[in-house]
Length: 92
Image (cartoon, rainbow, N blue to C red; front, side):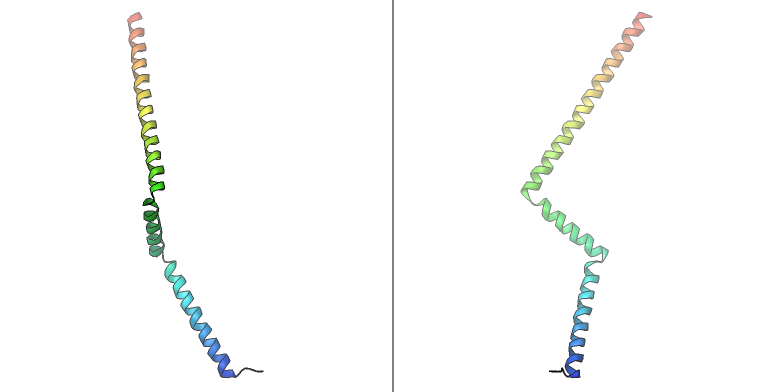
C-alpha cells in the first residue's frame, strides 16, 4: 500500500525536528565550559569516595616520606662533606 505524500512529508518534518534537537543537544554538551563543568563535577564526586580519599592520603604520606628522606640524606651528605673538608684543611 502506497503512503500518502502528506504522511511522508510529516515523517520528514518530524525527523528533521528530532535531528535538529539532537544536534542542539550535542552542541550544548560539547561546549568547552560545559565539558569543564562536567569534569569538575565528576572529579568532586570521585573525591567524596572514601576509597579515593584513602588512596590519596596514602600517596600524600608517601610523598612526604620521600621528601623527608631526601632532605635528611642531603643534610648528612653536607655534614660529611664539611667533615672531610675540615680534616683535609687540618692536614695542610
